[in-house]
Image (cartoon, rainbow, N blue to C red; front, side):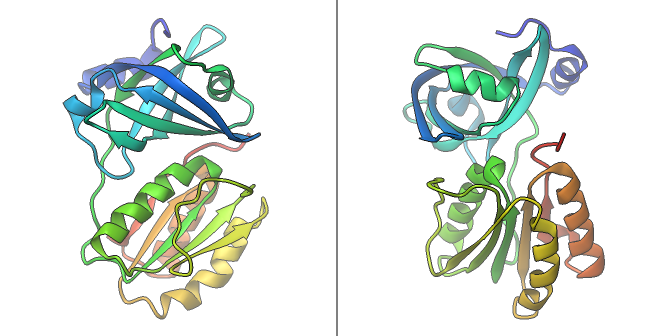
Length: 240
Protein backbone atom coordinates (compact mmCIF):
# COMPACT_ATOMS: atom_id res chain seq x y z
CA UNK A 1 0.00 0.00 0.00
CA UNK A 2 1.30 3.44 -0.85
CA UNK A 3 1.76 5.59 2.27
CA UNK A 4 0.55 9.13 1.61
CA UNK A 5 -0.41 10.43 -1.82
CA UNK A 6 0.82 14.00 -1.99
CA UNK A 7 -1.23 16.81 -3.49
CA UNK A 8 -3.07 14.51 -5.92
CA UNK A 9 -4.40 12.41 -3.07
CA UNK A 10 -5.36 15.52 -1.10
CA UNK A 11 -7.33 16.94 -4.04
CA UNK A 12 -9.14 13.65 -4.62
CA UNK A 13 -10.03 13.48 -0.94
CA UNK A 14 -11.52 16.98 -1.12
CA UNK A 15 -13.57 15.83 -4.12
CA UNK A 16 -14.95 12.99 -1.98
CA UNK A 17 -13.31 10.30 -4.04
CA UNK A 18 -13.74 6.79 -2.69
CA UNK A 19 -10.90 4.37 -1.96
CA UNK A 20 -11.00 0.59 -2.28
CA UNK A 21 -8.48 -2.21 -1.91
CA UNK A 22 -8.28 -4.74 -4.73
CA UNK A 23 -6.83 -8.24 -4.46
CA UNK A 24 -5.27 -10.12 -7.38
CA UNK A 25 -6.81 -13.56 -7.99
CA UNK A 26 -5.29 -14.47 -11.37
CA UNK A 27 -2.53 -13.26 -13.67
CA UNK A 28 -2.05 -14.03 -17.37
CA UNK A 29 0.49 -12.92 -19.96
CA UNK A 30 -1.55 -12.29 -23.12
CA UNK A 31 1.66 -11.40 -24.99
CA UNK A 32 5.20 -10.68 -23.73
CA UNK A 33 4.19 -7.00 -23.52
CA UNK A 34 0.53 -7.22 -22.47
CA UNK A 35 -0.62 -8.64 -19.13
CA UNK A 36 -4.10 -9.31 -17.77
CA UNK A 37 -5.01 -9.50 -14.10
CA UNK A 38 -8.26 -10.56 -12.43
CA UNK A 39 -9.07 -8.93 -9.10
CA UNK A 40 -11.70 -8.75 -6.39
CA UNK A 41 -13.13 -5.27 -5.99
CA UNK A 42 -13.18 -4.70 -2.23
CA UNK A 43 -16.86 -3.76 -2.43
CA UNK A 44 -16.37 -1.13 -5.14
CA UNK A 45 -18.86 -2.27 -7.77
CA UNK A 46 -21.69 -2.55 -5.25
CA UNK A 47 -20.94 0.98 -4.02
CA UNK A 48 -20.36 2.71 -7.34
CA UNK A 49 -22.26 0.74 -9.97
CA UNK A 50 -20.85 -0.01 -13.41
CA UNK A 51 -20.85 1.88 -16.69
CA UNK A 52 -19.06 1.47 -20.05
CA UNK A 53 -15.40 2.55 -20.16
CA UNK A 54 -15.37 2.78 -16.34
CA UNK A 55 -11.89 3.41 -14.95
CA UNK A 56 -10.12 3.60 -11.62
CA UNK A 57 -6.91 5.23 -10.36
CA UNK A 58 -4.39 2.70 -9.05
CA UNK A 59 -1.75 3.88 -6.59
CA UNK A 60 1.81 2.60 -7.01
CA UNK A 61 5.00 3.15 -5.06
CA UNK A 62 7.59 4.97 -7.16
CA UNK A 63 10.85 4.95 -5.20
CA UNK A 64 8.97 5.87 -2.03
CA UNK A 65 6.71 8.43 -3.69
CA UNK A 66 3.04 7.92 -4.63
CA UNK A 67 2.22 7.52 -8.31
CA UNK A 68 -1.26 7.06 -9.77
CA UNK A 69 -2.34 5.74 -13.15
CA UNK A 70 -5.83 5.18 -14.54
CA UNK A 71 -6.99 1.81 -15.91
CA UNK A 72 -10.25 0.72 -17.52
CA UNK A 73 -12.21 -2.14 -15.97
CA UNK A 74 -12.46 -5.26 -18.11
CA UNK A 75 -15.51 -7.54 -17.75
CA UNK A 76 -16.71 -6.17 -14.40
CA UNK A 77 -19.02 -8.59 -12.57
CA UNK A 78 -20.99 -6.78 -9.83
CA UNK A 79 -22.58 -10.03 -8.62
CA UNK A 80 -19.20 -11.60 -7.90
CA UNK A 81 -17.40 -8.36 -7.09
CA UNK A 82 -14.65 -9.01 -9.63
CA UNK A 83 -13.17 -7.40 -12.73
CA UNK A 84 -10.10 -7.51 -14.93
CA UNK A 85 -7.34 -5.03 -15.69
CA UNK A 86 -5.06 -5.11 -18.73
CA UNK A 87 -1.59 -3.56 -18.79
CA UNK A 88 0.45 -2.57 -21.84
CA UNK A 89 3.90 -3.21 -20.38
CA UNK A 90 6.76 -0.74 -20.72
CA UNK A 91 9.16 0.94 -18.31
CA UNK A 92 7.74 2.39 -15.11
CA UNK A 93 6.44 1.52 -11.67
CA UNK A 94 2.93 0.59 -12.85
CA UNK A 95 4.25 -1.93 -15.36
CA UNK A 96 6.76 -3.22 -12.81
CA UNK A 97 3.92 -3.87 -10.38
CA UNK A 98 1.81 -5.61 -13.03
CA UNK A 99 4.71 -7.83 -14.15
CA UNK A 100 5.27 -9.07 -10.62
CA UNK A 101 1.61 -9.26 -9.52
CA UNK A 102 0.45 -12.66 -8.26
CA UNK A 103 -2.66 -14.00 -6.49
CA UNK A 104 -3.00 -12.49 -3.05
CA UNK A 105 -1.28 -9.20 -3.89
CA UNK A 106 -3.29 -6.06 -3.09
CA UNK A 107 -3.40 -2.52 -4.41
CA UNK A 108 -5.34 0.58 -3.39
CA UNK A 109 -7.52 2.38 -5.94
CA UNK A 110 -9.48 5.62 -6.01
CA UNK A 111 -12.72 6.10 -7.92
CA UNK A 112 -13.40 9.69 -8.99
CA UNK A 113 -14.10 11.36 -12.30
CA UNK A 114 -15.14 8.34 -14.33
CA UNK A 115 -18.31 8.55 -16.41
CA UNK A 116 -19.90 7.72 -19.76
CA UNK A 117 -22.60 9.46 -21.78
CA UNK A 118 -24.03 7.71 -24.81
CA UNK A 119 -23.82 10.00 -27.85
CA UNK A 120 -27.17 11.41 -28.91
CA UNK A 121 -28.15 10.92 -31.66
CA UNK A 122 -26.59 7.49 -31.90
CA UNK A 123 -23.48 7.39 -34.10
CA UNK A 124 -23.86 6.58 -37.76
CA UNK A 125 -20.14 5.68 -37.70
CA UNK A 126 -17.54 5.36 -34.95
CA UNK A 127 -14.02 6.66 -35.57
CA UNK A 128 -11.59 5.38 -32.95
CA UNK A 129 -7.94 6.35 -32.53
CA UNK A 130 -5.78 4.57 -29.98
CA UNK A 131 -2.98 2.20 -29.03
CA UNK A 132 -2.38 -0.74 -26.63
CA UNK A 133 -2.75 1.48 -23.54
CA UNK A 134 -6.32 2.37 -24.51
CA UNK A 135 -7.40 -1.02 -25.91
CA UNK A 136 -9.59 -1.92 -22.88
CA UNK A 137 -11.46 1.37 -23.23
CA UNK A 138 -11.82 0.88 -26.98
CA UNK A 139 -13.27 -2.60 -26.45
CA UNK A 140 -15.69 -1.27 -23.84
CA UNK A 141 -16.79 1.57 -26.13
CA UNK A 142 -17.44 -0.78 -29.05
CA UNK A 143 -19.53 -3.08 -26.84
CA UNK A 144 -21.52 -0.18 -25.40
CA UNK A 145 -22.37 1.42 -28.73
CA UNK A 146 -23.07 -1.92 -30.40
CA UNK A 147 -25.58 -2.80 -27.69
CA UNK A 148 -27.51 0.38 -28.56
CA UNK A 149 -26.96 0.43 -32.33
CA UNK A 150 -26.03 -3.14 -33.32
CA UNK A 151 -25.21 -2.31 -36.94
CA UNK A 152 -23.02 0.76 -36.34
CA UNK A 153 -19.71 0.49 -38.25
CA UNK A 154 -16.37 1.51 -36.77
CA UNK A 155 -13.03 2.50 -38.25
CA UNK A 156 -10.16 2.09 -35.79
CA UNK A 157 -6.66 3.50 -36.24
CA UNK A 158 -4.45 1.51 -33.88
CA UNK A 159 -0.79 2.37 -33.40
CA UNK A 160 1.74 -0.09 -32.00
CA UNK A 161 2.10 -3.84 -31.62
CA UNK A 162 -1.11 -5.72 -32.34
CA UNK A 163 -0.08 -9.38 -32.45
CA UNK A 164 -2.43 -11.46 -30.29
CA UNK A 165 -3.87 -8.43 -28.48
CA UNK A 166 -7.44 -9.02 -27.21
CA UNK A 167 -9.42 -6.95 -29.71
CA UNK A 168 -13.19 -7.37 -29.37
CA UNK A 169 -14.04 -6.24 -32.84
CA UNK A 170 -16.62 -7.68 -35.21
CA UNK A 171 -15.28 -7.89 -38.78
CA UNK A 172 -16.24 -6.64 -41.30
CA UNK A 173 -18.39 -4.13 -39.39
CA UNK A 174 -15.32 -2.99 -37.44
CA UNK A 175 -12.23 -2.20 -39.50
CA UNK A 176 -8.89 -1.99 -37.67
CA UNK A 177 -6.13 -0.12 -39.47
CA UNK A 178 -2.89 -1.31 -37.87
CA UNK A 179 -0.13 1.30 -37.84
CA UNK A 180 3.52 1.37 -36.85
CA UNK A 181 4.71 3.83 -34.24
CA UNK A 182 4.88 7.37 -35.57
CA UNK A 183 2.22 6.90 -38.28
CA UNK A 184 -0.93 7.66 -36.32
CA UNK A 185 -1.45 11.40 -36.69
CA UNK A 186 -0.42 11.48 -40.35
CA UNK A 187 -2.71 8.60 -41.32
CA UNK A 188 -5.72 9.98 -39.46
CA UNK A 189 -5.28 13.40 -41.08
CA UNK A 190 -5.01 11.76 -44.51
CA UNK A 191 -7.92 9.33 -44.20
CA UNK A 192 -10.52 10.72 -41.80
CA UNK A 193 -11.77 13.68 -43.91
CA UNK A 194 -13.08 11.47 -46.76
CA UNK A 195 -14.67 9.02 -44.32
CA UNK A 196 -16.55 11.80 -42.54
CA UNK A 197 -18.29 12.75 -45.80
CA UNK A 198 -20.42 9.58 -45.55
CA UNK A 199 -21.11 9.87 -41.79
CA UNK A 200 -23.95 12.30 -40.96
CA UNK A 201 -23.66 11.63 -37.21
CA UNK A 202 -20.03 10.69 -36.51
CA UNK A 203 -18.55 10.03 -33.09
CA UNK A 204 -14.78 10.38 -32.78
CA UNK A 205 -12.98 8.72 -29.85
CA UNK A 206 -9.31 9.70 -29.42
CA UNK A 207 -7.31 7.96 -26.67
CA UNK A 208 -3.59 7.78 -27.32
CA UNK A 209 -0.57 9.66 -25.96
CA UNK A 210 -1.31 13.13 -24.62
CA UNK A 211 0.46 15.13 -27.33
CA UNK A 212 -1.12 13.23 -30.22
CA UNK A 213 -4.53 13.29 -28.55
CA UNK A 214 -4.46 17.07 -28.14
CA UNK A 215 -3.30 17.65 -31.71
CA UNK A 216 -5.87 15.35 -33.28
CA UNK A 217 -8.69 16.60 -31.07
CA UNK A 218 -8.01 20.17 -32.19
CA UNK A 219 -7.74 19.07 -35.81
CA UNK A 220 -11.02 17.13 -35.75
CA UNK A 221 -12.97 19.94 -34.11
CA UNK A 222 -11.45 23.05 -35.67
CA UNK A 223 -10.40 21.90 -39.14
CA UNK A 224 -12.90 19.12 -39.84
CA UNK A 225 -15.79 20.81 -38.05
CA UNK A 226 -16.91 17.89 -35.86
CA UNK A 227 -18.94 19.31 -32.97
CA UNK A 228 -17.34 19.19 -29.52
CA UNK A 229 -20.05 16.89 -28.11
CA UNK A 230 -19.27 14.37 -30.87
CA UNK A 231 -15.60 14.13 -29.90
CA UNK A 232 -14.13 12.33 -26.89
CA UNK A 233 -10.42 12.99 -26.37
CA UNK A 234 -8.32 11.85 -23.41
CA UNK A 235 -4.57 11.37 -23.31
CA UNK A 236 -3.71 7.98 -21.80
CA UNK A 237 0.03 8.43 -21.41
CA UNK A 238 2.88 10.89 -21.91
CA UNK A 239 5.71 10.19 -24.32
CA UNK A 240 9.09 10.54 -22.59
